[in-house]
Length: 256
Image (cartoon, rainbow, N blue to C red; front, side):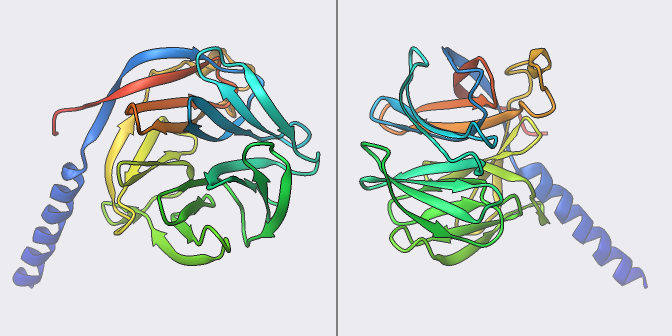
């Protein structure tokens, strides 16, 4: 009995040490840019000087190309009213978009936003990102789907955990230096995920970045939207209907 108790204590100590090992990052605001307060941000990425944004809500869902410095929408596509727009990502000359509960995705021409075709998937669609070979999709569960970018079929799944526990509500995604950054819906945190193991290797705490209590719907208008400018190494974040999009630098906090 004593030996079993000692082993249990050792396991608990190991788990506690592992929990301490996950680093937490704060932030420093580098710049704040205008953001459309009518944009219920669901998907976001940066490409060639512009932000590409997908907005939600049935009847007002859009795909937009947005000038970074002015926040002006320079190109826009309106979704049919029955769809709730979700994550987007580019692949070659295409733009791929999910919808929330319709099981329907759209593939557009990246330059014109003209619809090329639709595709189907099971469950909900929340967000998309990509590396050089695959797309990564979230659906609100702790499991990320890895998609073939040409067929849009699932080729494998990533089970996301932190300290051995599943991480739910994984929302907007961004590929940053070999990691997947994921907004954790209804929190001020972003998970930094190892795409090979699924382990959370860091947390980004964006508490205090913006006080959404001043917005008309603070319960809904939460942090959501991550974009990475790999060339200039700039990280952008925003939220649903926020008036600002922030360029931030991460600041590692001391270990606990």
